[in-house]
Amino acid sequence: MKIVVQEAPFDFGAEAQAFSDAAKGAGAVVTFTGVVREADAGAMAVMEIEHYPGMTEKALEKIAAEAMTRWSLTDALVIHRHGRLVPGDQIMMVATAARHRVAAFEAAEYLMDYLKSRAPFWKKEILDDGAAAWVDAKDEDEDALSRW
Amino acid sequence: MKIVVQEAPFDFGAEAQAFSDAAKGAGAVVTFTGVVREADAGAMAVMEIEHYPGMTEKALEKIAAEAMTRWSLTDALVIHRHGRLVPGDQIMMVATAARHRVAAFEAAEYLMDYLKSRAPFWKKEILDDGAAAWVDAKDEDEDALSRW
Amino acid sequence: MDVMYFAWVRERVGLPKEKVETSAATVAELIEELKSREDRYAAAFADLSALRVALDQELSDFDAPLEGVREVAFFPPMTGG
Amino acid sequence: MDVMYFAWVRERVGLPKEKVETSAATVAELIEELKSREDRYAAAFADLSALRVALDQELSDFDAPLEGVREVAFFPPMTGG
View: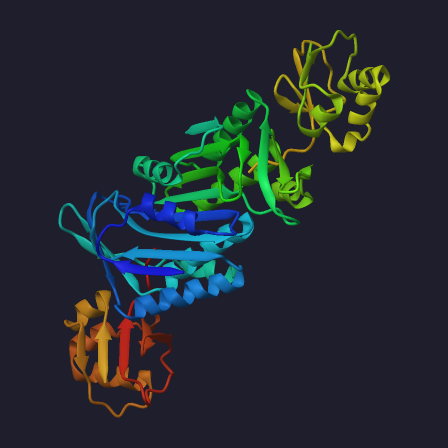
């Protein structure tokens, strides 16, 4: 299990390959990658991601450990960036390895659902006209937790 | 959309990276990779994958096109190997790109469920004592299709 | 028409592909014709519930008509992924 | 104790972190104390339904006791991923 919180970009291809290579005994590896999209209204120039150093790592460790146990994963990975990102940048990734595909998929979705609403990250969109707005949490993201 | 059926190994990290880089407009990229596990009973030396050249590509194209439409994917990728593989080898991968994570996850699961039971591949396990057996299709894999 | 066999169906029939001259109207009739030929076909087609058929590379069923079909393939349920 | 603010709570309060001497028994009492101090706190804490609290880096709630707590953090609902 590996948890990384960093400002620098990460190498998705290399991380995915290394995770898959190390997944001994697993028959199934799932990855999810989040990419900065254009803002829904207007053209986004920058996305700033603020986080709570210390708590962030603890929250991610807890979420990943819960997934490891619940789906008997052979491995799990979470990488999340903070700081200034631009559209097209990779924000974060998770990866899960399990014997069977259903477990690997479910665990990855669980990681994403909890990471969205329970890890202390906050996104701010800065449009190219300089206007800035914090991204509101979505009810559907909070609701997504009820299925687990 | 890219469909590849080949005997040679593929480079999972490079494919995942290239797919993610090309996923313009997508906020979410999901990959699934299948790895040859040890057989449930005994030690597997070789897994032989037979397929139906021509029909295989058509079936995968159809499954991927259906997923593209149903989840408004920005892109989809399927790579599946055939021939002789050994435990630890990557058999196949799928990747999906969509604006939002739920669509990317669902489409990847759909691709896997259909690929398992509707693409003409057959696996044979050859144990290290030379015994060989065709892998039986699982009822649960056929049942998985009913949710879509 | 071309008749193809895959996986253990191929192993039981003993070949991957053959040309068959037939006047069978449906897949089921073709199967009966093959079974009556030789034991190896009877063995391959003993349990139809364990078999699938594709006509011109599209999954089909045993009732389907063969008119205009160029390629018939028999195989067990698929196990990809 | 250390009190921390994140995202728009930080922007409204005007600082990321401060030391607060308090005898408040619960988070809710601490909030009332801060609101009575200055308008910027009243603005930050105007709608508690839009706020979350963590005590020593664990999510908690407004009724939670502060005894033994060293670090309190206020922030909006999280938007990671």
